[in-house]
Length: 289
Image (cartoon, rainbow, N blue to C red):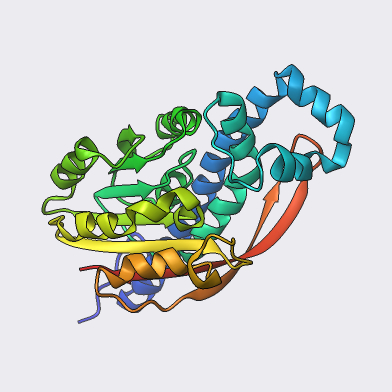
């Protein structure tokens, strides 16, 4: 049976085409909202840094090499703990656009009830997930650095965020896992390990981490892993940049299949000058259950 509308003036087939176009438009609108939301967060970071005398001094000294200087020298290629607001803001400024672009390039169209964010940093995964414009979600983050946790709390409370509850923990102690169990019970969970296994401090927790995750009881659980393509650090097992991740997934009974994804992003509100960057990340997305 063909259904027509006296108001729209077209039948069922045309209505289907219209509905498809509307869905595409809404998807594009969601992407626009994502960009606006991340830009709002990034603008906050830039404005805080612009007000700091030490940042102005470094920009004056290093000019267009400012970004490279803070990445290599101040932040030690992302390995320096960002306990202070100053270091955390520098990290968000230098690395959040890259991590955000990498996550968005591999993130499935998923609408979990709960995001468990390992190595949550300044909240990049939370902002990336909000770009799916799905249902609201709760976030549980494991992040050692106090400065990072503070910035992530700002990101969670931004206008446009669909993170309705944000809980930050410094250590994977009993309180963290008790909260994880409560939040995950019977709900759809997204686990994100964004560059988490690139940190040496994760090494002692690999087996215990897998066992704790296996003990959760969600209705569904998806895992997103991202990591540098290389080269690997000397402390990684067998010189493999994915060594600790493979060890982790082995305890979950999973055979890894690492893929590589290219991404690019624009940074228009850079402290030195607007830049366009591109890169590659290693990743895997799989259903734990």
